[in-house]
Length: 130
Image (cartoon, rainbow, N blue to C red; front, top):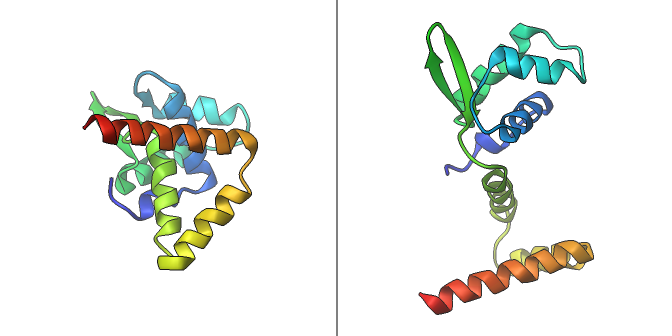
């Protein structure tokens, strides 16, 4: 996944992505508009613009369906989160990076710390089985 603008999602873009991630199939602009307008006042054309912008960023796939388009995420929520974390770590080097990681882990909740330990254990298992 390419680094950069894809992860810089605005509030409406993130809301659209959340809706698309919640689906098993691609969605029309109308479906996304209906979902977003249930919690905010938003014009249909605004949703169309947001989805077009997400397609240009590479965040969603825009699929032709007759005269309309269908939209589906180009990556998972997990992939976006990992990319955001890599971008943040990419701003520091060496000892600063290690300090940032220690600070992050030190301030993590018990659940997050357990998830990190489980993730590291999974990676270690993969490395030993390779």
